[in-house]
Each structure stands twice: as C-alpha cells, then as structure tokens.
Length: 317
Image (cartoon, rainbow, N blue to C red; front, side, top):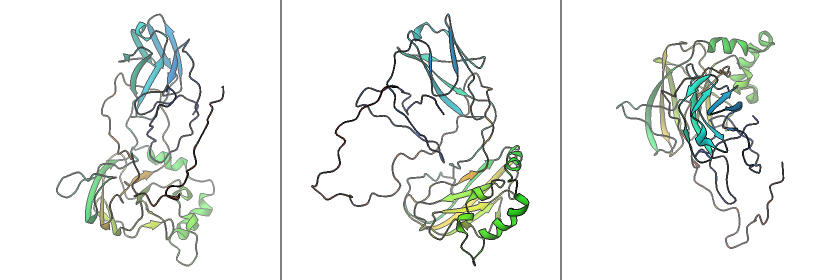
C-alpha cells in the first residue's frame, strides 16, 4: 500500500535491537520493508495513506480513505507536536493527544461495517465460547447472529464472471462430483458472485459437523479436497440482507484449539472518505497470538550448531 505502518503499541520507529509485534487482519497478508528513520522536517503521516499540512497551530489530514465502520490508529510525526491545537481529518475535527514526537489519534469511517469474521459464539447456557484457545469438546453446540449489508447483493452481482452463463452450472456440478477429481474448482473464487460461509479447523479431526441457518438444516457441506481443513457452504440464498440472521453449529469430538472461527467471504466493499468526529461502537476481534498446534520435535540435532545470522545491514533508501 506504500504507507508507514504502526505496530501493536502504536510505534513506527525502532532502535537497533528493539522488537515489534504487528497484528495482521484475517485473510490477508502484508509485505513490510525496513527503512532508516529520518528526522521529521515536515509532518509525516503514519498508519494510513494521505496528505498532511500544518497551518499555524492546525494540522490538516486529507485524502485518507478506509472501510466503513472501521477504526484506524493514526500518528503524525512532527518536530514540535505540542504546537498543534486543532486536528482535522477530511475536514472533520478530531480529538487527539500529543507526545514529544508525534500527534496521536484514532479515526473511524462512517457507515456500517461489513461483517466477515464471525467471532462471537454463544453456548446454549448463554455463556460465550472462547476461542481460538479452547479445551477439547466432546460435543458442542454454539450459535451467532450477524447482519449482512443490503448492498452486498450488488457487490455479488458486480463480481459475476463474464462467462457466467457458460461456466456456472459446470462449476456447481464439479463441486459435488464424486466421479471426477475437480477439487481445484471447489475453491470459493470459482464462484465470486456467491456468498460463502467458511468453517476452518486446524487439523479437522472434528466429526459430525452440522450447520443450520435461520433454524433450517443446510445439509452436507462442501470440502476443498479430502485432506483439507475447511468446510464451505454457499449461503447466498439462505439469508436475509439488511436483517439479522442466525447460524448454529453442532460438532462432536473437537480437539483442543481446533476451532478457528467461521467467516464470510464476499467481494470487498468500496472505501469511503467520510469520517466520524470520534470513534464509537468498536467491535473487538479475536486475535491469534501464538500457534494453535503444539510444536513438533526440533528440526536440528540437540547440541549441534544452528544457523546464526552473524551480520545484517539496512541499505540506504
């Protein structure tokens, strides 16, 4: 994206030997590049892409866009941050704080967030099922509610392939075929115009997985192949748009830390530049901070010398 990023502690500049920890959003990846830090002679925007301008004691940040409903941390590195008395983002005044080197604030974009990760699951007794780090479950029934934005219907329609008329029925047949091995066609990208529910597990030793949507049993689930660790379901026509929907899962013999959290897959929404004056209704996400699978035996002989990085250099920009 060509932007400076923040670590989980809101830092973007590190001394030699310091460690940084970053949380990567679900179903995404980041390519990071290390650069030598330079002294700020003009405002430097960190955390998002955009433009900054300092006019007397007013800091103006313009041209930033984000996902509706999402909150983004922003930092602006300045030589004299204490001189800033007012901050505006895309014309909207914001609350902020200052340190000895930067201005700090969080910005939330207007609109309802588009749900994808289904992180909040309830047991029949009303208690919360905590994951991804959980105990072995001999039998588990959990449910969650979600609301899909109405305009997702248009997002799906826009994603319809140009050769849809020719390929749609063939792909659908391949997905349930027992005669031919077309497992590579099962992946959801083969049908981008459909709304998919993905139910992933670490090792998929779980048995008897059943799903009901809005109290209707959906029947057999798709699998990418016989050795995959995820179940797939086309729920395009099983839910209501702009209204609450409920998913109920039933599983047996689920091992420790096997449940990774179902999510919805559909085309991305358009970014917006409209911002709120202050964040509200922040939805907390499930965060994975260690491996769900116990480490195996070491890949080197005990007592032997392991590879060591003896020297490293960060090249000039």
